[in-house]
Length: 268
Image 1 (tube, rainbow, N blue to C red):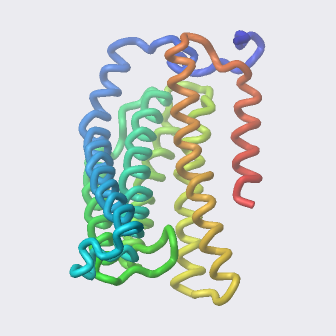
Image 2 (cartoon, rainbow, N blue to C red; image 1 turned 30 degrees about the vertical axis):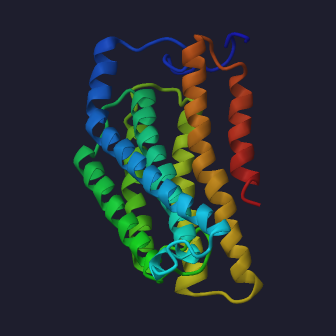
Protein backbone atom coordinates (compact mmCIF):
# COMPACT_ATOMS: atom_id res chain seq x y z
CA UNK A 1 0.00 0.00 0.00
CA UNK A 2 1.11 3.48 -0.70
CA UNK A 3 1.97 5.90 2.06
CA UNK A 4 -0.19 8.90 2.84
CA UNK A 5 2.47 11.41 1.84
CA UNK A 6 0.65 14.45 0.54
CA UNK A 7 -2.70 13.18 1.81
CA UNK A 8 -4.58 14.32 4.91
CA UNK A 9 -3.26 12.53 7.95
CA UNK A 10 -5.46 9.73 9.20
CA UNK A 11 -6.22 8.97 12.81
CA UNK A 12 -3.18 7.51 14.53
CA UNK A 13 -4.91 4.27 15.42
CA UNK A 14 -6.53 3.72 12.07
CA UNK A 15 -3.17 4.08 10.34
CA UNK A 16 -1.71 1.36 12.52
CA UNK A 17 -0.29 3.57 15.28
CA UNK A 18 -1.65 3.62 18.80
CA UNK A 19 -2.74 6.44 21.02
CA UNK A 20 -1.08 7.05 24.35
CA UNK A 21 -1.99 4.14 26.61
CA UNK A 22 -3.67 6.23 29.35
CA UNK A 23 -5.92 7.93 26.81
CA UNK A 24 -6.93 4.70 25.15
CA UNK A 25 -7.43 2.96 28.49
CA UNK A 26 -9.65 5.75 29.78
CA UNK A 27 -11.68 5.81 26.57
CA UNK A 28 -12.17 2.04 26.57
CA UNK A 29 -13.11 2.13 30.25
CA UNK A 30 -15.77 4.78 29.57
CA UNK A 31 -17.23 2.62 26.79
CA UNK A 32 -17.00 -0.79 28.45
CA UNK A 33 -20.24 -0.98 30.51
CA UNK A 34 -22.44 0.48 27.77
CA UNK A 35 -20.86 -1.34 24.84
CA UNK A 36 -20.85 -4.64 26.75
CA UNK A 37 -24.59 -4.28 27.35
CA UNK A 38 -25.23 -3.60 23.66
CA UNK A 39 -23.13 -6.58 22.56
CA UNK A 40 -24.66 -8.91 25.19
CA UNK A 41 -28.14 -7.85 24.09
CA UNK A 42 -27.22 -8.38 20.44
CA UNK A 43 -25.99 -11.89 21.27
CA UNK A 44 -29.27 -12.67 23.04
CA UNK A 45 -31.33 -11.54 20.04
CA UNK A 46 -29.05 -13.50 17.72
CA UNK A 47 -29.90 -16.66 19.66
CA UNK A 48 -33.62 -15.83 19.73
CA UNK A 49 -33.65 -14.97 16.04
CA UNK A 50 -31.84 -18.22 15.25
CA UNK A 51 -34.48 -20.20 17.15
CA UNK A 52 -37.24 -18.51 15.16
CA UNK A 53 -35.28 -19.16 11.94
CA UNK A 54 -34.95 -22.86 12.83
CA UNK A 55 -38.69 -23.13 13.48
CA UNK A 56 -39.47 -21.40 10.17
CA UNK A 57 -37.06 -23.71 8.34
CA UNK A 58 -38.62 -26.84 9.83
CA UNK A 59 -42.10 -25.63 8.92
CA UNK A 60 -41.04 -25.30 5.28
CA UNK A 61 -40.85 -29.10 4.97
CA UNK A 62 -42.97 -30.13 7.98
CA UNK A 63 -45.86 -27.63 8.03
CA UNK A 64 -47.71 -29.49 10.80
CA UNK A 65 -44.80 -29.09 13.25
CA UNK A 66 -46.19 -27.27 16.32
CA UNK A 67 -49.36 -26.62 14.34
CA UNK A 68 -51.47 -26.60 17.51
CA UNK A 69 -49.83 -23.35 18.60
CA UNK A 70 -51.16 -20.51 16.46
CA UNK A 71 -48.49 -18.14 17.74
CA UNK A 72 -45.80 -20.42 16.26
CA UNK A 73 -47.18 -20.64 12.73
CA UNK A 74 -44.82 -19.93 9.82
CA UNK A 75 -46.46 -16.57 9.14
CA UNK A 76 -45.49 -15.41 12.62
CA UNK A 77 -42.11 -17.01 13.36
CA UNK A 78 -40.70 -15.90 9.98
CA UNK A 79 -41.23 -12.13 10.59
CA UNK A 80 -40.21 -12.60 14.24
CA UNK A 81 -36.91 -14.04 12.98
CA UNK A 82 -36.39 -11.26 10.42
CA UNK A 83 -37.15 -8.36 12.77
CA UNK A 84 -35.27 -9.93 15.66
CA UNK A 85 -32.18 -10.22 13.48
CA UNK A 86 -32.42 -6.75 11.92
CA UNK A 87 -33.37 -4.64 14.92
CA UNK A 88 -32.08 -6.96 17.64
CA UNK A 89 -28.85 -8.58 16.57
CA UNK A 90 -27.57 -6.50 13.61
CA UNK A 91 -28.65 -3.09 14.89
CA UNK A 92 -27.59 -3.59 18.50
CA UNK A 93 -24.18 -4.99 17.60
CA UNK A 94 -23.80 -2.15 15.10
CA UNK A 95 -24.65 0.47 17.72
CA UNK A 96 -22.18 -1.03 20.19
CA UNK A 97 -19.44 -0.97 17.55
CA UNK A 98 -20.37 2.56 16.49
CA UNK A 99 -20.12 3.96 20.02
CA UNK A 100 -16.74 2.35 20.67
CA UNK A 101 -15.20 3.31 17.32
CA UNK A 102 -16.47 6.87 17.41
CA UNK A 103 -15.10 7.41 20.92
CA UNK A 104 -11.67 6.02 19.97
CA UNK A 105 -11.40 7.93 16.71
CA UNK A 106 -12.56 11.20 18.29
CA UNK A 107 -10.32 10.47 21.30
CA UNK A 108 -13.01 11.46 23.77
CA UNK A 109 -14.69 9.71 26.67
CA UNK A 110 -18.08 8.30 25.74
CA UNK A 111 -20.69 10.97 26.59
CA UNK A 112 -24.22 10.38 27.90
CA UNK A 113 -23.23 7.00 29.34
CA UNK A 114 -26.22 6.77 31.68
CA UNK A 115 -28.63 7.72 28.89
CA UNK A 116 -27.06 5.18 26.54
CA UNK A 117 -27.37 2.44 29.19
CA UNK A 118 -31.07 3.26 29.63
CA UNK A 119 -31.38 3.53 25.84
CA UNK A 120 -30.11 -0.06 25.49
CA UNK A 121 -32.63 -1.36 28.02
CA UNK A 122 -35.38 0.65 26.33
CA UNK A 123 -34.38 -0.83 22.95
CA UNK A 124 -34.55 -4.37 24.37
CA UNK A 125 -38.01 -3.76 25.79
CA UNK A 126 -39.22 -2.33 22.47
CA UNK A 127 -37.87 -5.34 20.56
CA UNK A 128 -39.42 -7.81 23.02
CA UNK A 129 -42.72 -5.91 22.87
CA UNK A 130 -42.65 -5.89 19.09
CA UNK A 131 -41.81 -9.58 18.70
CA UNK A 132 -44.52 -10.47 21.21
CA UNK A 133 -46.97 -8.47 19.11
CA UNK A 134 -45.89 -10.32 15.95
CA UNK A 135 -46.34 -13.73 17.61
CA UNK A 136 -49.77 -12.65 18.89
CA UNK A 137 -50.87 -11.84 15.34
CA UNK A 138 -50.45 -8.05 15.46
CA UNK A 139 -47.90 -7.86 12.65
CA UNK A 140 -48.33 -5.01 10.18
CA UNK A 141 -47.81 -7.44 7.28
CA UNK A 142 -45.18 -5.13 5.73
CA UNK A 143 -41.87 -6.95 5.34
CA UNK A 144 -38.95 -5.52 7.36
CA UNK A 145 -41.49 -3.38 9.24
CA UNK A 146 -43.68 -6.09 10.76
CA UNK A 147 -43.26 -4.73 14.30
CA UNK A 148 -46.55 -3.28 15.58
CA UNK A 149 -46.79 0.49 15.32
CA UNK A 150 -46.17 1.52 18.95
CA UNK A 151 -42.96 -0.45 19.66
CA UNK A 152 -41.74 0.49 16.18
CA UNK A 153 -42.28 4.16 16.99
CA UNK A 154 -40.40 3.67 20.27
CA UNK A 155 -37.38 2.37 18.35
CA UNK A 156 -37.36 5.38 16.06
CA UNK A 157 -37.55 7.82 18.97
CA UNK A 158 -34.70 6.03 20.74
CA UNK A 159 -32.41 6.72 17.80
CA UNK A 160 -32.36 10.39 18.72
CA UNK A 161 -30.14 9.50 21.69
CA UNK A 162 -27.67 7.76 19.38
CA UNK A 163 -27.61 10.70 16.96
CA UNK A 164 -27.03 13.18 19.81
CA UNK A 165 -24.19 11.05 21.18
CA UNK A 166 -22.45 10.71 17.83
CA UNK A 167 -22.81 14.43 17.11
CA UNK A 168 -21.47 15.34 20.56
CA UNK A 169 -18.36 13.19 20.05
CA UNK A 170 -17.67 14.76 16.65
CA UNK A 171 -18.06 18.30 17.96
CA UNK A 172 -15.81 17.70 20.97
CA UNK A 173 -13.20 15.50 19.23
CA UNK A 174 -9.56 15.93 20.19
CA UNK A 175 -8.25 15.50 16.64
CA UNK A 176 -8.75 17.99 13.86
CA UNK A 177 -9.00 15.51 11.00
CA UNK A 178 -12.11 13.37 10.51
CA UNK A 179 -11.14 9.84 9.50
CA UNK A 180 -13.20 7.99 6.87
CA UNK A 181 -14.70 5.63 9.45
CA UNK A 182 -16.19 8.61 11.25
CA UNK A 183 -17.87 9.78 8.06
CA UNK A 184 -19.57 6.41 7.69
CA UNK A 185 -20.53 6.18 11.37
CA UNK A 186 -22.07 9.63 11.55
CA UNK A 187 -23.76 9.10 8.19
CA UNK A 188 -25.41 5.93 9.50
CA UNK A 189 -26.74 7.69 12.61
CA UNK A 190 -28.20 10.42 10.40
CA UNK A 191 -29.58 8.32 7.53
CA UNK A 192 -31.36 5.58 9.46
CA UNK A 193 -33.69 7.87 11.51
CA UNK A 194 -34.63 9.71 8.31
CA UNK A 195 -35.33 6.42 6.49
CA UNK A 196 -37.29 5.04 9.40
CA UNK A 197 -39.36 8.19 9.92
CA UNK A 198 -40.14 8.47 6.20
CA UNK A 199 -41.21 4.83 5.98
CA UNK A 200 -43.39 5.07 9.09
CA UNK A 201 -45.01 8.26 7.77
CA UNK A 202 -45.77 6.89 4.30
CA UNK A 203 -46.84 3.42 5.39
CA UNK A 204 -48.64 4.00 8.70
CA UNK A 205 -49.23 7.63 9.70
CA UNK A 206 -50.50 8.88 6.33
CA UNK A 207 -50.71 5.52 4.55
CA UNK A 208 -50.16 5.50 0.83
CA UNK A 209 -52.02 3.07 -1.39
CA UNK A 210 -51.26 0.70 -4.22
CA UNK A 211 -47.85 0.68 -5.87
CA UNK A 212 -46.64 3.66 -3.80
CA UNK A 213 -47.00 1.57 -0.65
CA UNK A 214 -45.04 -1.33 -2.12
CA UNK A 215 -42.36 1.02 -3.44
CA UNK A 216 -41.97 2.74 -0.06
CA UNK A 217 -41.71 -0.65 1.64
CA UNK A 218 -38.83 -1.85 -0.50
CA UNK A 219 -37.17 1.54 -0.61
CA UNK A 220 -36.90 1.24 3.17
CA UNK A 221 -35.73 -2.40 3.12
CA UNK A 222 -33.14 -1.65 0.43
CA UNK A 223 -31.73 1.32 2.31
CA UNK A 224 -31.61 -0.34 5.73
CA UNK A 225 -28.95 -2.59 4.24
CA UNK A 226 -27.14 0.10 2.28
CA UNK A 227 -27.40 3.16 4.52
CA UNK A 228 -27.46 1.63 7.99
CA UNK A 229 -25.78 -1.79 8.18
CA UNK A 230 -23.31 -1.28 5.31
CA UNK A 231 -21.82 2.03 6.62
CA UNK A 232 -21.23 0.54 10.06
CA UNK A 233 -19.55 -2.48 8.48
CA UNK A 234 -17.36 -0.33 6.23
CA UNK A 235 -16.40 1.94 9.11
CA UNK A 236 -15.30 -1.11 11.11
CA UNK A 237 -13.28 -2.44 8.17
CA UNK A 238 -11.57 0.92 7.57
CA UNK A 239 -10.57 0.97 11.24
CA UNK A 240 -9.56 -2.63 11.91
CA UNK A 241 -7.86 -3.66 8.65
CA UNK A 242 -5.24 -0.85 8.61
CA UNK A 243 -4.74 -1.32 12.34
CA UNK A 244 -4.14 -5.08 12.05
CA UNK A 245 -1.89 -4.73 8.98
CA UNK A 246 0.00 -1.76 10.42
CA UNK A 247 -0.44 0.15 7.16
CA UNK A 248 -2.48 3.21 6.18
CA UNK A 249 -5.47 3.22 3.85
CA UNK A 250 -4.18 2.83 0.27
CA UNK A 251 -5.90 6.01 -0.98
CA UNK A 252 -7.65 8.20 1.55
CA UNK A 253 -9.26 10.33 -1.17
CA UNK A 254 -10.75 7.26 -2.85
CA UNK A 255 -12.21 6.17 0.49
CA UNK A 256 -13.97 9.53 0.83
CA UNK A 257 -15.17 9.25 -2.78
CA UNK A 258 -16.63 5.86 -1.85
CA UNK A 259 -18.48 7.42 1.07
CA UNK A 260 -20.07 10.16 -1.03
CA UNK A 261 -20.90 7.71 -3.80
CA UNK A 262 -22.78 5.55 -1.29
CA UNK A 263 -24.48 8.58 0.25
CA UNK A 264 -25.63 10.13 -3.02
CA UNK A 265 -26.48 7.16 -5.21
CA UNK A 266 -27.28 4.07 -3.14
CA UNK A 267 -30.75 5.13 -2.04
CA UNK A 268 -31.96 5.35 -5.62
